[in-house]
Length: 281
Image (cartoon, rainbow, N blue to C red; front, side, top):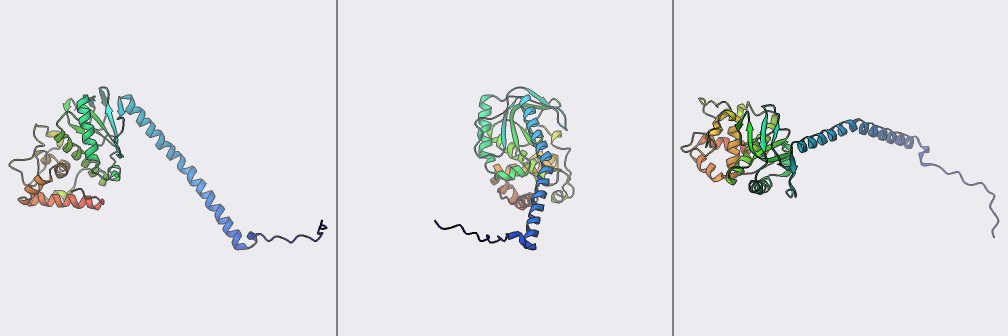
């Protein structure tokens, strides 16, 4: 066995002996402490958002809205179905509805799956379109309504009409979300209004035009419009044109060939969507 060496061990030189290394260590510590402070500051907001989501889910469950099972594949939009009669308060007055029949529910789910998949998922999320409630018998101020958008990022969708009408109604309401997300309002919209003839004036809004057939294609057409309902308000004009472009583009093409105002509106609508990075028609 070799004898133990009594010579002193060499002194180890640590990497942090230099001033630069100590400054780097200090900077790292500052970054870590700052990150912890930011996380702590954000935690209440994150917790508040979670509480708000939980409260929203509880409120929807309390009035009888249940998630569809199984959920539609690939949709970022939550699909709920009314299971009991309900009434809720909105900024424009109380709204009531009831559960759809099994046949209407099945047809509506097929329409939702097919039509909402035509949109890029994040396009709908950025528009604030988070969920749709499938129901029937929607009424507001005791008057029948087909649907109601922008209720706490939710679309209330009546589904008792034909599949063809439901397809167009869905796209019409989607555009109301998109339109509102642009600047937090649906009107005024002077760039759009300037496309109309100088003498044209919109009506008193969609709620003032509930006549049967108001949303049907115009025959003979009114220059610049695809349906009489579009003349009721500037927000309805945009949503009606969008819905026809999504469901019957050939009709719009035919009308636009003889209608420079409608052609200009179609171009403007397409340009607005392309500024959002989306081309749908």
